[in-house]
Length: 356
Image (cartoon, rainbow, N blue to C red; front, side, top):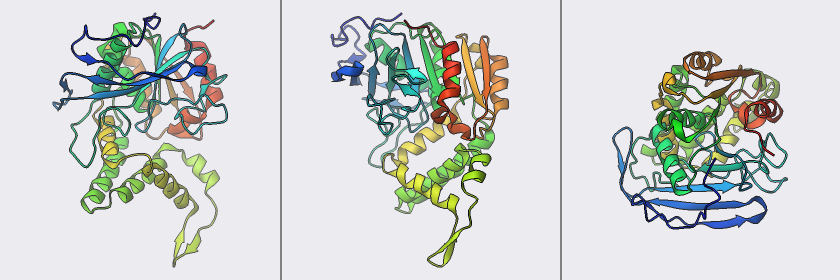
């Protein structure tokens, strides 16, 4: 269903909007290729911004004749979906789910991903405190389309998108229904829940205040700590953090506080405050017309998800022309897409394209 058998390094001079990207075989064992696609024309964005010289960082792995899928995750996800080392889950954001023998078997599927526009990867984003235009999920869909054209992939067998990636998948299917055969959307809906927007709005205020105060990293650390409290479930926190607080430096510190701040500190080592602002806002700007998404959609909702209520996904599926909804239970809440390998495996086995 794709043009992947073509020579992927041949020139794209026939398309004046694309220039040749870097390409290297970085891991022969996993048939891994990655590169940077330079867009040689102005990229006009959905909310009115213009990027004069955009670039897209991408990565493609897996057998040449396998079904072709795009995998996308939350706003901190990147193009490295999985690691070829079975004992290494640190370098791929979805390595607990994707890899040899995992819920999405990397030895059977051709897996494409990219760094988000506006993020902290190799795709164009804010840098050095400079302003960056507002980014829509439709803009992410557009750079994916350009990447497919560059790699000569005519039709994707499927897009699997979780959290923000699910929003991008829906936007892509609405705009380019002839370029993808099916979607799997996990913990994402056609628009953002107002309660979730409330939490994220406070997070963005914290980061902006800290930038103005000259302490951007501390603000991002706090914002991420607050975000982690919304990603997980009440049940998990009650089980893990019911111990008594400890007195330190003249005040009480609670076990859950230690956990949240540790996660925040880890986040600031790999993500930029301005990128967080850009993509957090993009989530809340997201709104697609569900009735216009004619591609078959498998939706997976998590009953304990605080950020994407199961009621929102049920409502979306009622308006999608071709949809099937699975509901799972997980103490990991919104983060279930990162953790629930066996529950997801059962669904993936039923809905993903057959491989040989």
